[in-house]
Length: 413
Image 1 (cartoon, one colour):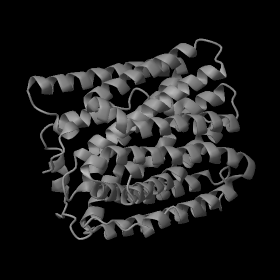
Image 2: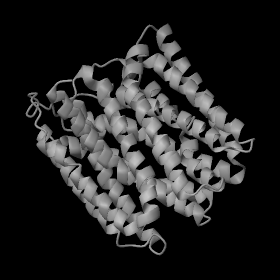
Image 3: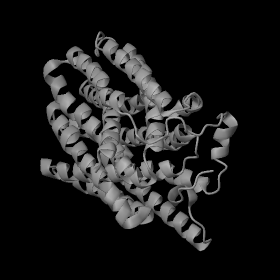
């Protein structure tokens, strides 16, 4: 790997790590504490709504693209969003999680607005700077950075929270977010793209046009269902472990460190898997692995669950998520139109966020009204539905002798 490529990938890695740490911390610590305080699973599931800015970020994604005529402009968006993000995180430290819960939730929503904006600009920055042949490894770095951030935010920081408490941890988080901007500040790409970012004014009509492209309906369906076989288990895993009697520290080690560590490894190796087996076979493989994972949880819940059984399930779960994330990011990057990189990529990822939130809320209600076993059975069913959908879409396009454009064709309109 040459020096230029190393700087490029390390810069992207630092940005995705910085983005993921606070988000994973808020998404992990709060549900664990809520469950320990006897909040219902339905209430914990509804907490997913704090991620609303990531759902509606496509409304201001055109603003980011329209005002960015060079890589420097995207860098400015990243810097300002990240600083805003850090300030909000810092302010959360002045409030008590026990007595100012609503205030903290509102601040978390504001923080996620900054995070979502940074994500739009960072994804566009990555798409423009990465060469076509670098996108596989680039998306592995993106997913790896997210998993490293999750490992630190939901694992290491959950343990530190156990010892240091809320205020000290939030101050440290804010400082880290600022420090993570240093590689971006010093990164000066050698490629002559600073003044050659193709632009076209993006309006609501242009967003609608994205969904009028040939083959996009199949793409949307796959995106909506791709995570459906595991996302509910991922969201309910920590409350499940609380109910099994595990402590905050133990959950931090089992899920935050071991689980996300497995996700990090699988994400990093996914570029080789996709290159070796292509998108179609990789999609089939990970979907079958999701079904096997939900089936495994459905089986072990019938027994006196031992820690080694839980760890196997966690390894399967996060390995699925790591591979699936790289597949989604890579295919989404290939489906963007030139000059609309941030908007088009955001639109596709928003579809996965919307479907994930719907699935998590539904799964939390199933687990709360019935049992965790019912949740695992439902996830098995969703995995089969996802597998059948992918199979029939690929078979249909093969029969019609046409490519599934958003998945395998890198041409842009």
